View (cartoon, rainbow, N blue to C red):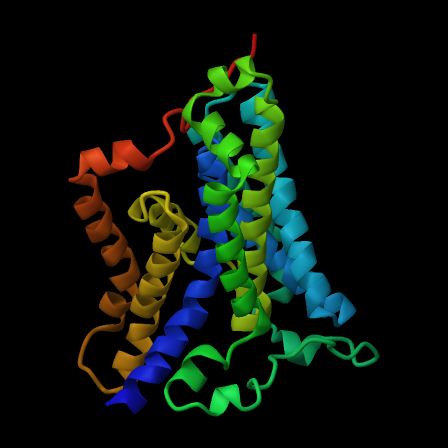
Length: 316
């Protein structure tokens, strides 16, 4: 029984890692009071930027950095529109997603259905490959394959969670960030640069979304297909609400949805007679169900959501 469960849990962790990056980045942005609905577009642009860079240079780490830079550049557009030009955050985020979908499709046309490992230039061998299992630790029964047999970026996502949790609730800078999300006017009155901090939080969120996309196209697949994020950006947005803006719940939710995503493949492999369309819709059905359940508890949402979320701030 355990031998059957462990591969499913391990696959769920790997499938949930892009959601961890994107959702934690969006969590930080929303804690500052910025609602960026462009996560899907930023993930797609990060995915094609990382894939194209990895293919051209043979260095997948450069591809990951390119994905982060592309996601940050997309979020910079959003920040200028919403923080300087006072555009509506919801409309700007939706426009950013549409822009990202179009740009990624256009740039990625030459890379469609191309395997990254096969198409890297022969004179520039790939410098990053999935790392071998951690010696000794990976041999521990149950815990070994469950905790010590992943790509390095999975462990980076765990470290990112720990840093963000400490930053938000154990550091002075995190307290400032949360105070800006609660009352930007009060934070400005005591001398904090609200716009600058919101810029930094938004750029961080974009970089994490881009990294999630790059992980997906370079290390998880690894290939480029138009629209390959398949709604993961929207699920990441839902995760932040599902987690009531708490990092630990974001992690748990990401792996839960990763498990739902991967369950369809195990169900098909087990010969369960369920239509492929129904299995493919499971992650989105789960998202709707969870949001409905969470939305019933209005008090919890009001207690944990940033008061100024999505509200424009006009400094005097």
